[in-house]
Image (cartoon, rainbow, N blue to C red):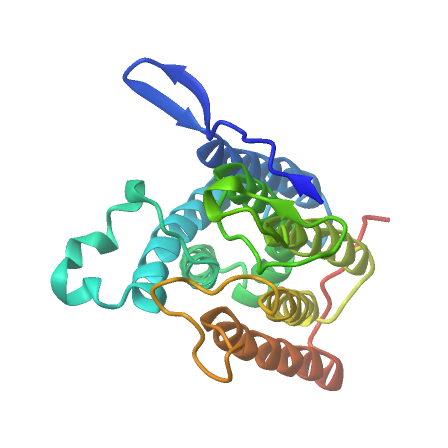
Length: 268
């Protein structure tokens, strides 16, 4: 049994200004995506050039922040729509949804592809391997904040988080860091090194993330205001992940059955 190390969620305290680790994790995700995106953009088949990554990042960052907040309210705090609709835009109060953030990023990438004519699906294939950097960093931020804990467990690595009582729990944030951050990044990065049909990389991202999230939800506590949706185990996270897996499988099928171009790998 382990004990939570009691990490201060404030990384830098400048008097009236407090910089939280969670905010810094967003910065790590954006910076990592920008650096690796510029490297990937040097490939001959890339839909964008290195100097365009700043614009792609801006569209994606706005999408993930607005989409994440709006998705959280729509999916997890629906009552706020009638009691406090301005909560939709108060991103500084916390509460972000990955699934909403994903929809926001897709909207941002679609808008960028529409303005530049680079091709939406080619752009999502390009961006998919960059996303796990932010996902992994965000889950570390959740761990530092002491949020999104798992169920009570007796596994050797279970962790006691004193504010939630003496019982050890699954460190589900670290499970998600490992699966959504490390494993997803490695899988997508290796997969996209070779030429792949258009939509294949995006499809694999959706299948893997949706599957990983669905699995971890079995040991992660549901959101308190929602609880379990059905069967005393089915959560909102699982409900939102099922369409991702289905859509990802459809994209993979279409990519390989129709031979939709290629999203190639390294330059030769």
